[in-house]
Image (tube, rainbow, N blue to C red; front, side):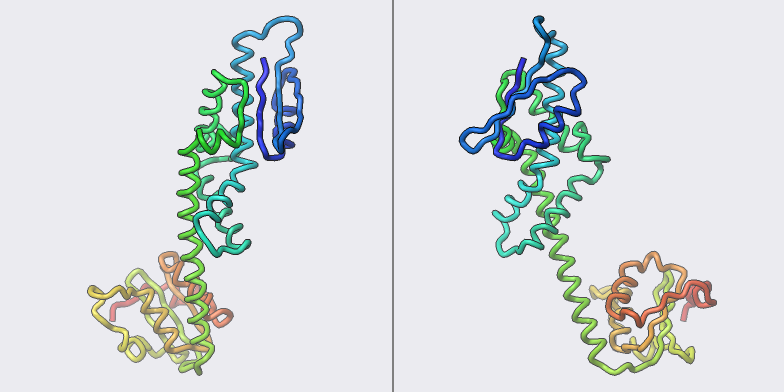
Amino acid sequence: MNITLITARPIDFLQAEFNHRFGYTVGLHLWQAGGLNFFRCFLETGRGRPSNRDIRRFQEQVAEIVATFIVERWEKTLLESLLTSEYEGLDEEATEEICRRARAILDQGESSCLQVQQGRGESIYGRVLEYFQENSWLNIDGFVRFRLPDYLMELDQALEEAVDEYLMEKEYDEFVRLLRYFVEAQEPRVEKVHVILSPGGFQLYDGENHNLNGEYLEGFMVDMADSELNYEDLLISSLITISPRQVILHGVDKGRYHNTISTIMSVFGDRVIQCNGCSRCLQPLQKR
C-alpha cells in the first residue's frame, strides 16, 4: 500500500511529520521532476499483505498530515495570493498584517491549528480521506484549488473581515492623529480638568472644583435623539475644546467607557492621569 503526494511547496514539513507521527514502519521515497516535489510513502509489512484496518489507518494518518500541511504551511501563502489578487496598492507590511489578522479570525474557536479534526482542518481532512478511497496519487496544489472551494471561500471571507478591521483601525489612527494635532496647536483654556464618569454620563470640573459642563458643553448640546452624537463623542469634543494641560479621569463605570478612555489617552498622552481611589471615584454621578 503506497500513497504519492505531489506539491510545488517544500516538503520538509511532510517528511518531519511522517517521521514523528507514525508508530509503525513507513517507507519514504522522495524525488523531484518538472519543478515538483514527489513524496511517496508506503507501508512496510514484510511479506504479508496489509490488513484493511492497517490500510484505513494509514490513509487516515496521511490525510491528517496533508490537512495539517495545508493549514500550517500553505495557508499563509494562499491568503497572500488571494489578497494581492483582490486588493491593489497594499505594501508588504499591510499585506503581512492583514494576513495575520485573517489567520487569527480563522483560528477563533479552535484550540490549535495542529488539531486538524477541528474547524477548517476537519473539512480538509475529510475531503482528503475520501479522495484516498479511490486514488493513491494526490496533487496537493491542484486539490486545494479545485477540490476545496469552501475552504478557499472561508479564507476569502476571513480576508474581507481582516481588511475591514485593518482599514477601520487605520482610519481611527488618522482620526486620533488629527485630534492630537488640534490639542497641541491650541493654548489650554484650563490647567486641569477632572472627568467624572458614571452610568448616567459625565461631568467636568476644573482644579477649583467648578463645574464646566454648562460653560463648555452648551455649544454641543443638541437634541441627542435626532443626532448621531453620543455622550462619549460629547466628552471627547469637550476635552478637545478645553484642551487642558492635565486630564484626570475618575469614575465608578470606567469599564463602560473603555474605548473612550483609550481615545482620550491616545489624544492627550502623558497629560492623562487615571485616579482610582479618591472621593470623586467612589461617589456616583449626581443629577444636576
